[in-house]
Every structure is written in C-alpha cells, then in structure tokens.
Image (cartoon, rainbow, N blue to C red; front, side, top):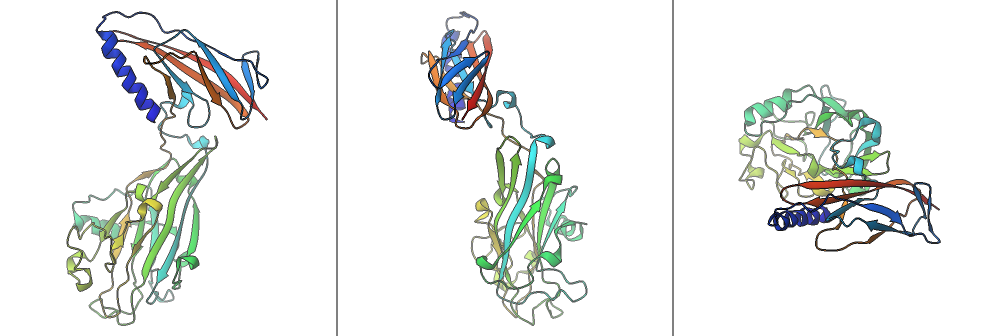
Length: 359
C-alpha cells in the first residue's frame, strides 16, 4: 500500500512539472529480460528460476514510472480492480468463536418455552436496524423470525467458570460466502424463576463471554481473509434501557444502543472486539434480570481488496534493473506497467513475463 501511495504522489508531481513544458515527449516503451545465471535461465518465453534465488529483471525503454506485480497471491495484475471474490474461488469459509459463563444459575432448558442464556441467530433478509428509533428496533429484533445459527440445545448449558473450559464452535459458512447476511446474539434468561416484576428470586443471572470470534475465508490461491467481531458492525440493543435499573446507573449516555468498558450489569462490553472478544456482565440475585441483543450490520464475506503492485520507478530515479525473489515453486505471470505522463497525455505499456519457479 505504501508503494502505491508513493506512485500516486510521484505521478502527481510529474503531471505538474511536465505540465509546465506543455509537451508530451514520448510514448511509453519497455522491454524486459532476465539476467542469466547458474540459477536463472530462459526457456522459450519463460524465465526459470530456483525457489529462493533472485531474478534480476533487466529493462530498456526508460519510462517515467514502472509498477511491478509479481503474479503471487495478492499481487496479480488481472485482479487489480477486483473487489469481490467469486464463489468458485473460495475454498472454505468458517465462523469460529468460544463461549463461556461465570456465576449464577443457568436457565432450566427442560421448562416449556425455555431459552438458552445466550442464543445465536442468522438471517439473509433482516432489514437492518435504524439505530435512531429504539422503539421500532427493539420490536423488530424481538419479533423477527430469525434462523438459529447455533441451536439453543448446543449452546453451553453449565457455568464453566473460566475460558479454559469454554465451549468452542466452528461453523461452516460456505453457503453464505457470496450472500449478505446478518448475525444476532440474544442474552436472556426466560426460564430462571422470576417474580412478577422480573426480579430474580433464585440467584445471579450469569456473565457471558465470547472470545476469538472471527470469520476466515480461505481462497483457492492460498490467500486468506479474516473478519473479526469489530468488523461486523455489532450494535447493542439494550432492551431494558428505559427501566432506569439501579445496577445500570453508571451508563449515562447512549443507553439504547451503547456499550460499556466496565462491568455494568446486563450491558455489552465490546472493548476487546478487535480480537473477537466481548462480554455481558452478570446481574446479582434479587435484581431485575437483563435482556439485551447484539445485531450486526449486513455482512458480505466475499469482499476483498484489489491486488496491489509495487511502484519500483518514478521520475526521481533511473532504473535499469530490478531484483525479486520467489520463495514458493509454481508458475507466475510477472507484470510490469510502464507509464509516461504529463498534464496533456498519458501513455502506458504492459509487459508480462512468465516465471517458473522450481525446487
């Protein structure tokens, strides 16, 4: 990325400086060969090199700029404008995370209509949160016909007490890899004995932790992309935010959609989301039970960054050769984009070189 910025900056300078001349000097030209050594040879139109040994590319033509694409994953000229990965290029896609609980009493799943302490959902057609109309958003998430991402019966049913005893999940997301979907997490305790006013008469409502939540897409070309919880756009929906509960008084701003960085009962703490970790704090016995959601933005997993080239020459330097080392055996198409430019005109030429890397 740094090299690309340098290229753009240098190009801008060249346009300004050559623009003063008012002339376009010459069309871009470039020839590329390879220096022959004990480890580098040319067979037909292919450069053959041993893995781990440098190829010294030799240039003639002297363009103003040269950008190099090695042909390796992440640096392929043909993917310079790609922003989405095709379904057939995705080898696997998985969502992984751990869940564990501390303190209190778990819901009794043998009771009618019982729900897991934490439930996880997915939808391909959730319309999204307004994020500025809590009445509508809370009604929407509460009444929406979600699909179970993990069945309640498969969520943890005991207090593990420590992350070392956490339940680990790996979910195959390949069917969702080229669709847009929404993830949702609900924290609730429907079957724990409550008084009519919603106050627990049994024990603490447990604290729930998530750790290491991430989506990993592995491509057939060997590259991977990772999305962590912080990339999901998870928004809390604090269902009881208007009850002014005594154990939530420290949360003084954005009570409807906000998170905290401390142990506020029944409110999500998202401070570790960049590594996939977050939690919701417990509620003591004799206090009102808590009800809260986390709802993601629409997620499209097959998005990707365009492949990048490296700016190896600008108008500030002469370049007669460039050395590059391929470490992995395979066949690559090295691409050199040569450009001459001023404010009146731009001329480019593309030179592709086949490189075969052997053991």
